[in-house]
Structure formats: C-alpha cells, structure tokens
Length: 69
Ligand SMILES: [Zn+2]
Image 1 (tube, rainbow, N blue to C red):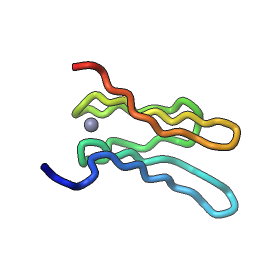
Image 2: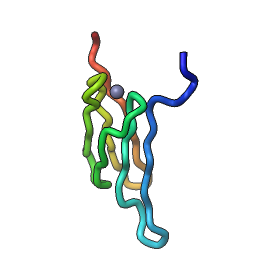
Image 3: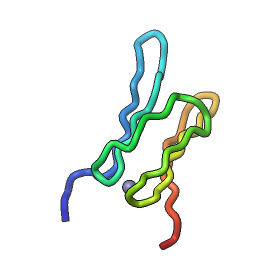
Image 4: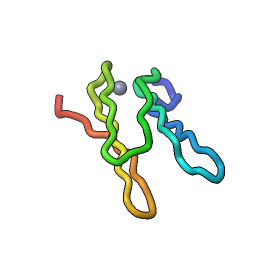
C-alpha cells in the first residue's frame, strides 16, 4: 500500500484578505477547486466521495462523505 496521502486540501489565502479558495485532491488526483463559501462541495469522480466545506463564525470544516458501497 502506498503511504502517500490520497486526500489533500490546499487552502489558498492572501495575507490581509483571508481564505480565497480550496483545491481538493482525492484518489491522488486534483479533482477541482471550490470558492471559499459555506456548503461548497466537490464529488470525486473516482471514488464518489463528496468533499464539503462548511464555514462557521470562527472556523471552518473540510469533511468527506462517503456512500456505503
Ligand atoms: Zn476519490
């Protein structure tokens, strides 16, 4: 088994401005970019995992939702 991370969230931010966008890697491949807004999501075309951004008043979550196979 590969020890490389298969999921990665690259968060783009600009000092003084804040977070701009999040680029999502899943299954070792970049699957897209979402703007930094609440409830943005991307679904991986390879494993169908849904990556969801949820923003709260002083923090945000990046979570993965997988369907039962
Ligand atoms: Zn995937």
